[in-house]
Amino acid sequence: MSIESLKCKECGTAYELGAYYVCENCFGPLEVAYDFSGFDPVEAKRRIQAGSQGIWRYADFLPFEGRPNDPLEPGLTPLVRADRLAERLGLEAEIWIKNDAANPTHSFKDRVVAVAVAKAQELGFKTVACASTGNLANAVAAHAAAAGLDSYVFVPANLEEQKLLATGVYGTNLVGVRGNYDDVNRLCIQLAESRPWAFVNVNLRPYYAEGSKTLAYETVEQLGWELPDRVVCPIASGSLFTKVGRGFQEWLDLGLVTGSQPVFNGAQAEGCSPVATAFAEGWDVCKPQKPDTIAKSLAIGDPADGPYAIEHARKTGGGVDSVTDAEIREGIKLLAETTGIFTETAGGVTVGVLRKLAERGEIAGGERVVVYITGEGLKTLDATRDTFQMHEIDPDLESFEVEFRQEVAA
Amino acid sequence: MSITVKIPTQLRAATGGESTVEVTGATVGEALDAVFDAHADLRQRITQDGDLRRFVNVYVSGEDIRFQQGLDTAINEGDEVTILPAVAGG
Image (cartoon, rainbow over all chains, first blue to last red; front, side):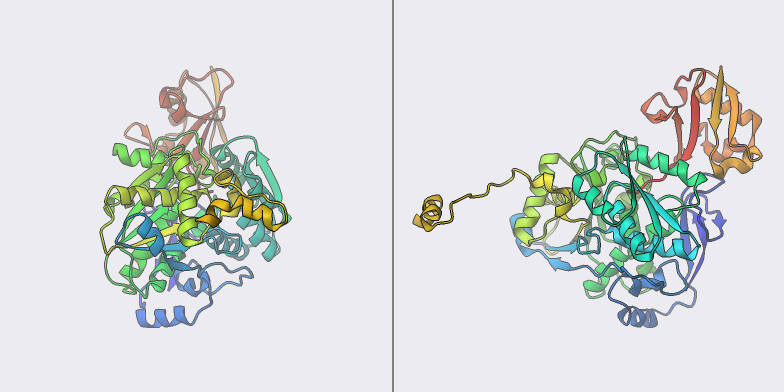
């Protein structure tokens, strides 16, 4: 396998491999194009299985000639069967949770950042940067520290405290911008023009986005080289959603797995649902929104990959749904109570949409469904505040007996 | 009315390397038409059938025109019109 070029997703114009992300002819996004001629699926499978215990076992499908040196390798996160969750939802289906909170900085963003930081080093950058809703900030700061690069991390100033603390600790230049994510993003696009920095999700975006494909590869491998029937996946910019689809498609095309694309269900928060709205209205493009939701990691009002996410949901017979803040909190609790997995608000959105699909009877008995949990509950503690009560007692037996008399008597 | 239109790096090949273009116009659409008159190659790069292509974002003094009246958004003396590619992913 070799990487061929960067190719415009809209008009197909090819560019050399560098820090470019926009087509000069039509402004479309650039994507990495590979040359898989002479590909041998048996040999490829052997190389994967003999590979590292993380995303670099899939190096043959990532934009590098060899396996890069990565001191903080993410990936191979648990895929767990969630029978108690299925039961609570009244489903006869197989529900699997892909717990991507189990990454070095506790979100799926470690995958994309590992790829982007390795590429930044290959291209000779000394400083990495990003526009972030929080999880990306954690990942960029950590991977830059591990690689010995300087970093600048731009976030909305009103971000959850946990995400600010879990970024600053790595010794990055943390910049809180007085505005929402879309304002931060616009600022970073402008900065990328004048600074010699690798903005992982701006000028390195074509490489960065490739990292999300590893979620699809792992899912196939962990299911015993089979595809799920359906996936439920959160949508912020739409990049993860479409790249998971691309990952499945590549392996289908290359003969590493047989079957067809799973049905793709996208999940958004009602307070920031440009993709769900466009899907419901039958539009091909998204109308931007001003986000107002507790799911801050999904609060992108102007999702650049929205059109591709809509297209993929339609093509696979799926859809894009949204849930309220109350349903997000219930989703977090439901997952925690039935699987022991504590997710952040984005996971609450995803589980909330799974529940909606179950209630609408869209998930058939015997279906195999994979639910992507992309981040850790400890990062958004406010979402669980006041959802339960602690029993406070004096340190003596009587105090305990009094407090729990009802339960003891029963 | 004098308006400054900021051209992103990726489009400067079409403006002879210029990063800003001074034009006149009462709306974003008129200002962009004036830019296209001066640099004809830009029109097909960022518009299609009279509308902006789907990955082109335009801001008037920092505010996305899709939150306003699109190409009909009024502009005033001294406003800055910025053209940027749509990129996101936090």
